[in-house]
Image 1: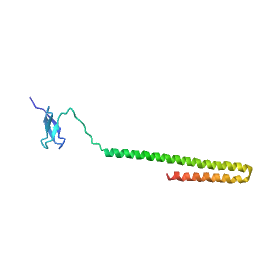
Image 2: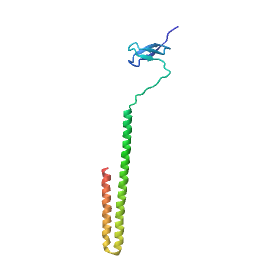
Image 3: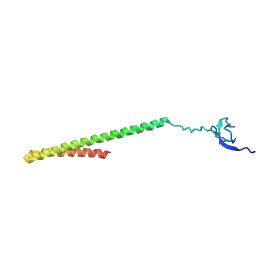
Image 4: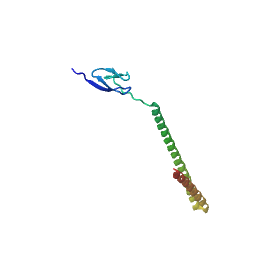
Length: 130
């Protein structure tokens, strides 16, 4: 009858060990650590860095909030631009109607054109900056 050995590494000092087959455990001859050969309840343990997980989650939430704020600012800028163009259009239309009756309506057209030009140039500068 021959004795069979299996090769195992010590989990503590990583020494190569030869252990008799069929034994449930043995002790490392170098450091004395108990080495489980066959464990029916074998578990895998993973080191989870909870601080890193929390940090990445926080960064994700902050980025989402930044995107929400950017979207609100864009919406606000669009509304402001539409109001300014609406006022400019109103001046142009009222000036045109007054022009039909008398020459003084030209001022309404000029004011409306100035507001539209000012709004356009202001928005153009903002888009060039970004």
